Image (tube, rainbow, N blue to C red; front, side, top):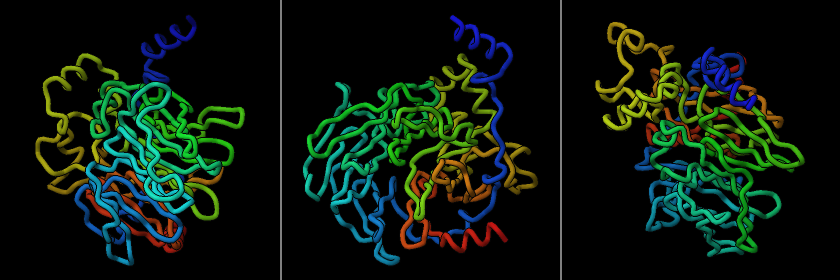
Length: 364
């Protein structure tokens, strides 16, 4: 009863979950153009995820698994379905998610092991995989109602059916770590804990070691996959930035439902992986452009962002592609050989940054 009263009060006063305010890009998240200026390694057709075994980088591109050899991408294997998540396993194999509905082990000692459900519920939108130090596999199933490629439908529908999963490669067992998440997208092991990104609530959660709660919240964007960084800490991908306009629409039920029913999804007032390609986009006018010049500080419909986190989950610094850039829709980032490889799905590019050089430029 008390929780209901607090919720009603928040809606009347426009605070808490009902607020449309958005945290600014400041401090460790101060904007720069380092991601926009990154080297373009490859232009891909339908990229979706990255993985590394510490020596090499692998990329999923539609149904293809590619290996980066220097500056060339070579096909390792072609499947009959689209890859929606990918990770390297310690024994040399891969874990691959197909169409968001099935997870398979390819190679290694558990080759052929498959999962299509957990806790009696079928997978619908598996979007991230990560190995755990206990020989298990972590996964996130973004939504139980919307397929992987309809993530914006889940956001506009106020979806809360995401799950965090732990899969046992030896026995084939699967268990739910957490359920009822507002789009689970990204997971990793952090000591004895499992960390999970909850995109629509703009936060990073922890489970295990006798505690649960937020590691990092009130992010100015929608977090996605998270991977380990050399020397401790993590790389957190953020696939879109938040805006007050979208926050407002999410709280206007009648308008939002009518928009979803009458307008094509690419023209919704919603975050997207790329923008600026058509005059039909909803965010236009002098607050975006002046005299034909796109303002880099304009409200972002799409954005590119990678955040370097400390081992405790606190932001240390970040790499940006701002509103006037093209390397938007960052869905994955992995570190290998002193470089950070970034997948900008909006521009369909694989990018590379020299981490030491980027850090020096940030401190200059």
